[in-house]
Amino acid sequence: MRIPFVAGNWKMNTTVTEAERLVIEMLEKLDRVEGVEKVLCPPFVSLVAINMMLHGSSVKLGAQNMYFETKGAYTGEISPLMLRELCEFVILGHSERRWYFGDIDEIVNKKVKAALANKLNPILCVGERLEENEAGKTEEVINRQVTAALNGIEPAALSRSSDEVAKDLIIAYEPVWAIGTGKAASGEQAAATIQFIRDVVAKIWNETIAQDLRILYGGSVTSANIAEFISHPEIDGALVGGASLKAEEFVGIVEQTAEIKKRIK
Ligand code: PEP
Image (cartoon, rainbow, N blue to C red; front, side):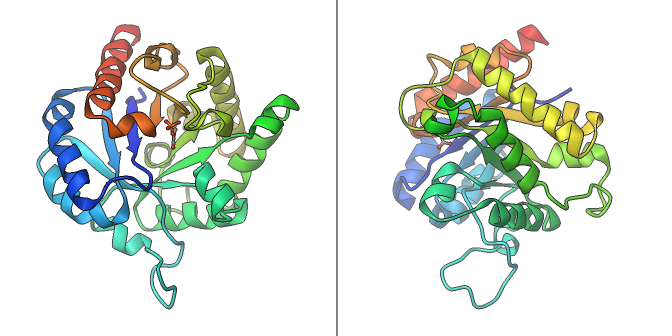
């Protein structure tokens, strides 16, 4: 049984004060929703404050990025050791990191390895760009990104069982052309690519891990279209950007995910 999962990626939005206010607006309602793992990913500077605010609630915390070394002379970077005191999850390989900050496949791979080695759960993002989609290269790109990100990661080497690996890693399929554009993929498109990702993972590791692994859709998800995605059994939840900055919207997305997944179970 894969537990549905919804994460809000606040990106480079909210000051600490604004982040605290947003948490106050949504926490009680989010906390009440059962059957969905709920995660907030605010900017680094708000992690300490929000970690304290979430204490005792069912809402979990994630970071938006990290460096792959644990400590040292890497001015301006944040390490897995620092993050693991504060949060359980870390978004890695987000397309904005890949395209604006040079996080190429090899770097994403090092980050995924470092996160797992330091007991942080990676939310690994993969997705094709518009021109790749239009050229019919979606599967080629996704295969390359997933294979590269998981390269050299052996469940046994991580001292984890297949179950644990599947629990620790989350993959988010985020077509770049759908992120922040208001132009979401269709439920069918997203479900088909997510099935493809599962097949790729089965080839890399095995069918058990692939079946247990949670795979999300991300890209212009709102409370108005979440049902289209979540009603596909293949899609285990959503990574939400813009709509996660509005308390009512994000709560609506999480509530609908819980209701729909309960119904189709
Ligand atoms: C994201 O940044 O991961 C994302 C999916 O953004 P948006 O929901 O705004 O498209």
